[in-house]
Each structure stands twice: as C-alpha cells, then as structure tokens.
Image 1 (spheres, rainbow, N blue to C red):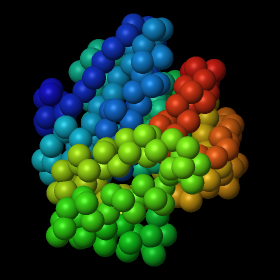
Image 2: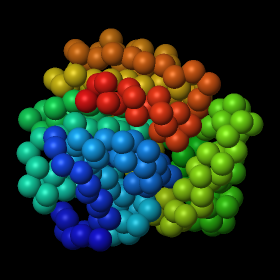
Image 3: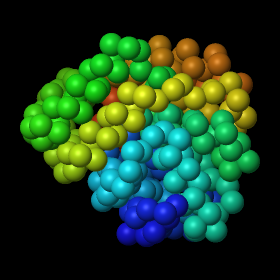
Image 4: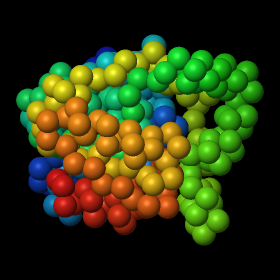
Length: 254
C-alpha cells in the first residue's frame, strides 16, 4: 500500500522497459490482468493498481472517473514515469480514455477492452439500484447474476474455473467500495474520444452483452487512429476469458 494523491492505493510494479499501465473495471482488481502482466513484464515496466474503493485500495471519499484518472497520473509521477501505454477494461476504459484525452502527453498508446460510453438513463438506474442492493445485502446478492450475464456461455460451460475466478473477484470486493464504484459509473460522462491522439486498439468480445462489438466499431469512427479486434465466444471479462488472445493482441499493439 502506498500513499499517492493523498490516499492509500495498492500499486504493483514489475519488469523493466517502456511502461504499461493497467486499469481494471468494476468488480476487478490488479489480479484481473495477471496473465497479461506476467507476459509483458519480460520486456516492459508493468504497473497495476486497485482503483480507490476496489480490491485492496480502501474507499476514502467519493471516487469518480476523473479522480481515478488523476490517481493514475499521480502513480506515474510517484514512480518517476513520464509516459506509458495504457490498458483499460470496462469501466476502466472510461478512466483510461479520459486520461488519454486530457493528458495526451502522458499516453503513448491506448488499448480498451470492452470500451464503454456513458450509460443511458435506464442503465444508470439499474447501476444505482445495484449499489443500493450491495449496501443492504452484500456482494452475494449480485455476484452470481453478474457472472451469468457478463461471461459467455462457452466460458461457463467449458472453463468453469475462469467463471469461478470472476465470481471470486466480485465476492472479495468491499460492499461499500463496490457501491461507490457503481455510483461513479452511473454519473460518468463519455470521454472526449475525438481528442485522443495516440493509436488506439479496441478489443471486443463476440458475446459481450455489456459492450458488444458494435460499440467498439462505433467508437473507432470517432477516434482518429483506432482499430478494432473482435474475439469470438467470450463475454465481457476479456483478459480472463481469453487470456492468450488478449495477451497476443496487446503484445502486437504495444
């Protein structure tokens, strides 16, 4: 645990070389990227952190996409790193894209797994209701449903250990922190994707109901230098459900 940007944040650093900063999504932790971090650490400085309110980083205030992006930049400053390739997943794509759009001097490349826009009103209501449910009943009230909805049928059928890992990530979240993260997602605005100047890779899951391939294809039309890659037969937990494919895509892009 390190004191960064005036708050305790869990940060992991390994490897040597050009920097790669990973930003996890709602319900995730640094462990979400374990396969990719291990592979890239042989030639890169790999940096992972738990967002405030998630995993091992305690809730200290009312986090937002903007505050998380500020934390990410503060981590680079704390480690003496000027620029980095940034990888974001799900809610973390909002954080990563916000950082790339507002601080293009810090982001060399941007990879977005299951990229999101701001939620429509109905989705915001559902996300706020999930926050209320978790505060009242704990993570056990929502985790099984999230696993069923956000992983592919193939993952649950053929790779139950992967689905169980996603379930464990969710169950290990602090309910108050997870609820605060839900509320941050509900109030998030769409980043200025058109202001991003770095090359961008949009990775989509063929069976992703949260961010279907059409979302990434639409975003690619707004971003000056973007490409889309679709991985079939996976849902929304890309780095877990298709670890080898995601690692290969990141290696080729970064």
